[in-house]
Image (cartoon, rainbow, N blue to C red; front, side):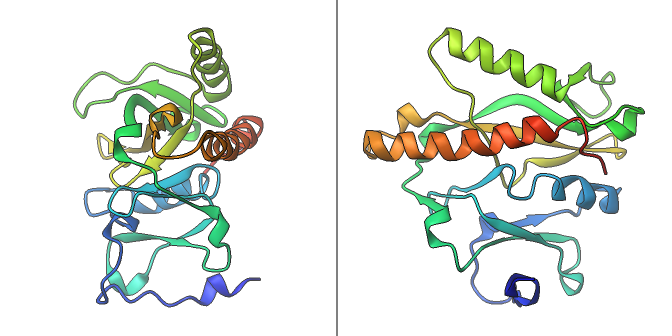
Length: 204
């Protein structure tokens, strides 16, 4: 076991607020915690304030801090933090990842934007939907690089946790070299492929 488990979190000290996610509005908190843990190190986490993308981190739920989740980048893996990620290269997708268990289905599901009080979302198995998205993006010479940021863990009708996906458009990282952009794309793609392979067996 790494020392990460014993890393103390003092939220009274100045912190990167992008890495402290409020879970106050989430009713089924335990389910939400189990669900978001499925994506730990499988989806990169973006911080707008420091323009960094974290690829190696732990998700921590400090009991003394109420309804908060803290993203703890691995302090021993500096190379796993990607710098110079401008907000102009990050955009919302309108795509949401849901736990299949809530709808009596296995694995992960993908749906389009969901609104409280609206109709139940139309879903597709995550694996099938992701393959379609990647194929469609490839046809127009683009790549699909999903990431998470603060505010992306949400809940539908106080029943079902879900993650809204942002995406990174590496071609808009104009201040970085083509080598750096390729490296970022490769890093996120590797994680996405691993998530793709495991999507049908991930459950909370």
